[in-house]
Image (cartoon, helix red, strand yellow):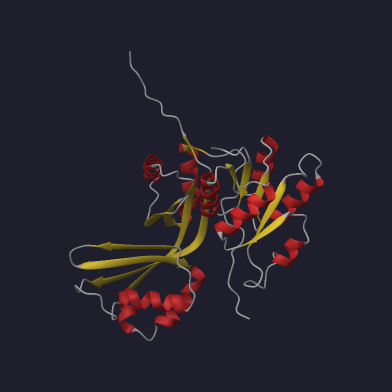
Length: 179
Length: 130
C-alpha cells in the first residue's frame, strides 16, 4: 500500500509588502583594520546625518572583499546621489538595484521550519530573493516589485492566512517634517 | 500564574504587537493579537477582552473609529481602551494627533515610542492589578 505523506499548511498571522525599494551595495577590499576611510562607514554616516531610513542591512564577507547591502525607499535616491557626490571613491563602489519590494511574513514564532517553507514556496515560483532579515516577529524578504503579487500567491498556496486578512500594502507612511 | 485578565494588543506593526505581548505575558496577562481595526473587532466579539491596547494609525479601521464603536456599544463599552498615540509633534501633516486622541472616549493614552514599563503601569492601574 502506498502511503502519501500530507503535511498540514502552517498558519501565519499576516503578510505585508512595501514597494519602491532600492538595494544599495558597497563592495570594498578587506584592509585588515578598521579605518575612517572605510567607504561603508562614510556612507552610513552620510545617511544618518541626512536622516535617511534603511529598512534592511546586511554584510557578506569573503577572503578578499566585504559587501555591505542596505535598502532604502526609492524616493530617497535623488538625495543620496546628491550627498555622495563629493566622494568619488564612494560613488565608484556603490551599486544600486532598482524597483524592488519587501514582503514580510508574521509572526514567525522562531520557527526555522517556516523560513524553510517560505523559501521553498518562493523557489518553486522562481521568485528572486536579494536579501532577507528577521525581526522579533517577522521574516522579511527583498524581491522585485513585479514579483510581490506572485509571492503573495505562493504564500496563499502554501500557508493558511487568516480569513479576513489585513491589506497587504501599507496605506500610509510617516515622515519626519522639519518645521 | 495567570491573573485571568485578557488583553488585546492591536497595531499594524507586528514587531510592536510582539514586543508588547511578550512583556504582558511576562506579567502573567493572557494576550490576544490583532493587526488592524477590523480584525480587532472580530477578536473582541469572539472573546471579550478586559482591556484593549489600541494603535491609532491602522488600515481599514483606525483606532479612533474602533474606540468610538466600542464605547457606543452596550455590550463592549466597559472594556478599557488604552490608545497608542504615535505622532503629535513630529508630524505636522497628519490628522492623527495626541490632541485628537483626547477627544475620543478612550480610558487612557500612551505616547509612542512606547516605554514598556510605563505601559505596564497604565495597564495594571486600569485593571486594578498589582
